[in-house]
Amino acid sequence: MASKTFEDVELWKKAHQWVLAIYRHTERFPKHELFALVSQMRRAAVSVPANFADGFKREGKADKVRFYNIAQASLEECRYYLILSRDLGYGETNELRSQLEAISRMLEAYCRAIIPRH
Image (cartoon, rainbow, N blue to C red; front, side, top):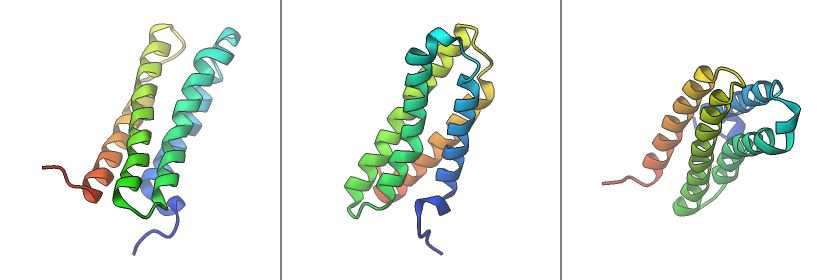
């Protein structure tokens, strides 16, 4: 059975839960990071399920994949922010990075299913 809304898709559910975890993770950051790393990390994280949702309703394959690619790029941005926050001593990021990897694999599979690469 095909998903009727983006909320039915397991990838979106995982990405949404990951965003909530990013918010919890960044709540512990120093106050001086509120308008710097916290803001950047949250914005990039929110972009993942938001762009998946946007692409979900797109009609054309190329348009759909374009939004999924934006979500992939935001994941890569978050990958760096997680490395940076770990290196700054703002908390352990292994679980968040593991979740990021799972979401990334799912997004890649979606893109390949829509437009196969040779």
